[in-house]
Image (cartoon, rainbow over all chains, first blue to last red; front, side, top):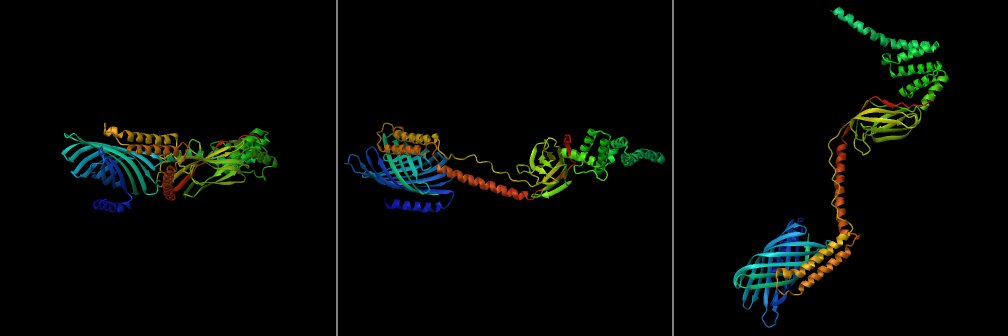
Length: 206
Length: 346
């Protein structure tokens, strides 16, 4: 991880700890390992995620970076940086809505490439075993897509399905999720599909 | 004019004075006739004195004396049924009355005692007006005609017993106390309550004393409603199936997500990892939540809710008890009414 991401992680940790002492505010902080696959390359990224919840409103932050290697093994790999912020409204214990920007940045010898999407989605949570094991499914639709190479806009959509294991009275939790999204640049016949298998290990503070 | 009014008043007042005066005179004449062994005349005079309008001027002691002479006179007139009926009236009127043995011979006292023994009735003495705070009591004194078993209860306007305050034997006398509450612990208030004394047995009488009970109490807090939203503490068949079904649905969602989001794309096999994890979790959830299995987390949540409810209920109870300590009760008793005179042969 770069100095920039470490700095962001430190800022997040600094912001989350004081909130944990408040009874009405809860927070989580977690580390991520992503297995990212596109049509042409694949790789691993590391990152962190965190959330702060006050009653029914939750703010989520996610950041990861890594390197993707082409499948043919001959081309040059590219760096990946991904970040997202979402504001989530928990309508019921099992249904929530969220909105926020998601950015994906590739650094390749041909130059930087950036995809920015505003995502509006719904998420359903299902209790599987007690309160310790939960599953979730989310679908989102891009409210707008902005790409710099070639400059243009388009549409995007995606989804995620995962399982979370909460260790009960201990503040640790683990999650495994599979997500896929597809972005289509209008008038450019360019389409980007990204799959990600994410393993998350985190702390929860009530 | 004044002379006419005075004359009219004297005309009206004269018979009244003659009647009240004659009750005592008739009684004296009856006693004299009895001593002269003229029992027919004595009985006639005594019946007259015990019948309105002369009876209105008699108090209970004089009435008991007249009944004693009348019973004895009827006995000597060889009218046993009449003598027994008169003595029964006497027992009902004054259960503790005894004929004077210096005046009446043993055969009269024996007959009276036989009637008294066969007539089970209780006299009740109550203070006319009693006022007390919570914790105080109304005391009623009970005197029986003969030792027997009684039931003392507080009854409502409809005669239904609100609380039984005593059930058991009564000998020479009995003090019965009542704290003003019904069987549920609430104050029994009303203008037409009754203290009912039922003498048990085939010849038992029933006597009622009207009570008027007023409570001057502050308002109390309502108790919290009973707990209704408790979680199941044992798994049902549906609990496990719901876990399994939810996990299976999500696993299927993971497998079909690529075709939903990116139709036509060839998805990688990484989604099988999540689908597998979900399936295993669902199986674990199903096995751990099979029907009958205890759900300790739900039990703990329920326990917390019960504890909170109990604390709330206790707080209301304490507060209400504090408020009720300031309450005052006022009970006014009326004259006893005999509902069933306790018939039977001596």
